[in-house]
Length: 109
Image 1 (tube, one colour):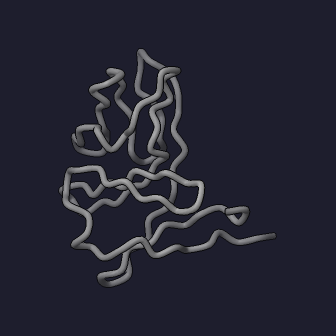
Image 2 (cartoon, rainbow, N blue to C red):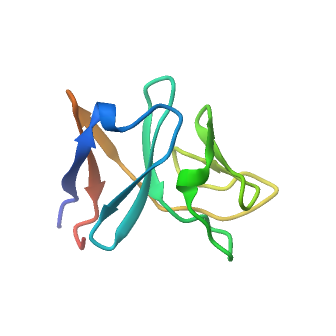
């Protein structure tokens, strides 16, 4: 069974708290968020809305983001859209080791 690959995306200081930052790795366009309580989250940088939109424009509130373009509330931990809307965004595991920040990508990446 293939393992995820860890890709370094920068240092802790490269990611301001409460703001989304776009990271491109090959074909992946990822939005990385750092919450005020020290949480790190990474999601596909596209809303699940049929018209799309970048999640890096989202507003962080606790462990959710609010997409002002599409009026969606999305949970950072699992990428699920909160009711009454539906949908889901792919998530990626973020690894912080000292000052280094990395994202685990699927083996096929």
